[in-house]
Image 1 (cartoon, rainbow, N blue to C red):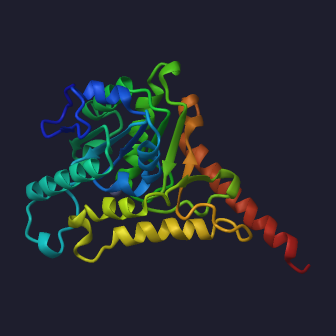
Image 2: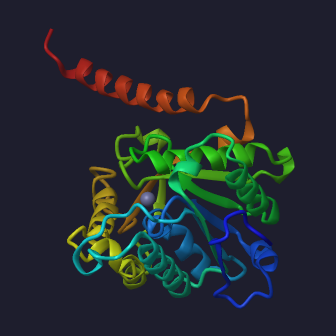
Length: 285
Ligand SMILES: [Zn+2]
């Protein structure tokens, strides 16, 4: 298996003989923009694979992580050194989480933002064609990070181009930069991210280059999961101790004619209707 960028990194922590062999076993696949996104958005999938025999997790990071901020001990690192550090951090996470495969495609963010970029498209097509995951975790379309949204769109293009019978049965868009607590309850997919709390903390702490200057993504992610679980329902006690919210993107993959923007904005329309209806019920007239 050969990827288009010379710096692409293939890592097989599970000891598979080849990337093809590892991908063939993957049941839960997460394709994310940056190093650390997978561990923020898909902990539920990582835990599912650890707890269920026969399940295997695969992680794909599409960009090279070059544009990240330089803080604390990393303040004087060059772009090149920073990419090296982040690649190594992602590999460590893959070992801790027992991923079957960790791919880092090393594309510059600007390439990913180009619709139809041949190298990005070829890499994603090769990956999606080589596996048949039951669940795919992607970025969510209302995320406010440009690169996250671009990676999502490139993934949807690649998934839609697969023959219908080869497309995954379940595709989820997960919260990172902008949470999904605003979705109406009927639109929410609750991913149980409260399992294996020690591992969850370790998986986030691995990304020292992102955290050490005071941006505590590790604490923020665990806090968000806990807040999501507590504020989910006002009456029931918490069935899950941590929740990552996701939007079900399966319809966009099953029906390539659906417009991504219209599909996303319909979720916002349902929030708007929900707020209006509640106010309408209790306002004095
Ligand atoms: Zn990211």
